[in-house]
Image 1 (cartoon, protein in one colour):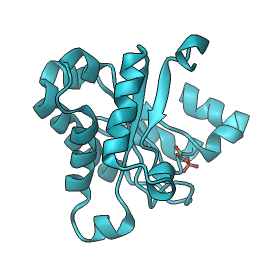
Image 2 (cartoon, protein in one colour):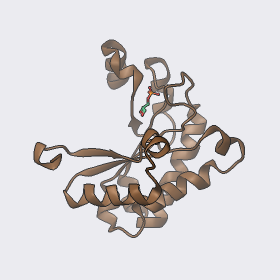
Image 3 (cartoon, helix red, strand yellow):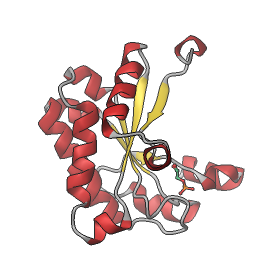
Image 4 (tube, helix red, strand yellow):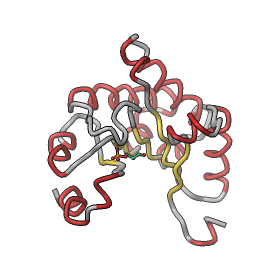
Length: 168
Ligand SMILES: O=C[C@H](O)COP(=O)(O)O
């Protein structure tokens, strides 16, 4: 149905669905398969909880989410994916990851994509940051290594602010 409406991008693995609707890594992989099967592109959401960050397993968790959804797929499909790194502690929280934190995780994601599909495919993947992005924080975050754009939530409800994020 989405494909027949000319939808091009579909979100999979959003943290709320993972947390509240039992969307496991296996379900996310199946969703991503369905998205590709219908010639659309997945926006794969990944991210860690506060507890996972504090206990030092954040990067391992996020890499596992990426590998589970995109591993063993043709490089051209991996290249067509968008990854949204959305740390759960930042979503709708008014707390934004620092540019350094975002860069560190987005670089780890790019490296994992390189392991899965090669550096050329990995370089083509758009990696977004999501989590309390505002017009004030967007400039510095966009300057962070391997942050290619944003998945904006609350700030998109304010036309002026969203416009500032889009135009820079
Ligand atoms: O899914 C959540 C959004 O992408 C991020 O929402 P937020 O910008 O309100 O934190």
